[in-house]
Length: 120
Image (cartoon, rainbow, N blue to C red; front, top):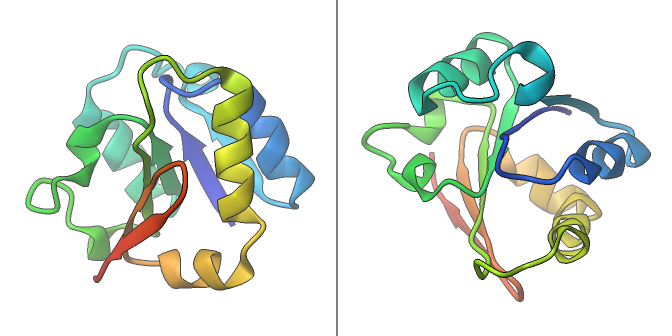
């Protein structure tokens, strides 16, 4: 899979995704460090990438209809979570082939102990 990683996630997310055989692009590496949400969403959509973010605005399916994207994965974690904890929670998700397959055209909300999918 191809992933676009939002600037509100640690850079170690890219390393994790590549370890699982995925393509990972960080918005900071393509000149979108401070880009507005719409610009990031358009980039993900145009390049057919799953967007990974902690920005809950992307969970608004009226503004970002999941069926228009390869998938949107929103990590809903505590404010004080460490980079190591973020990677650990994300590893749980990417290690599940069934979840990855189900993500296409859907919104997934990933929390510490569960994942919720919003249908396309």
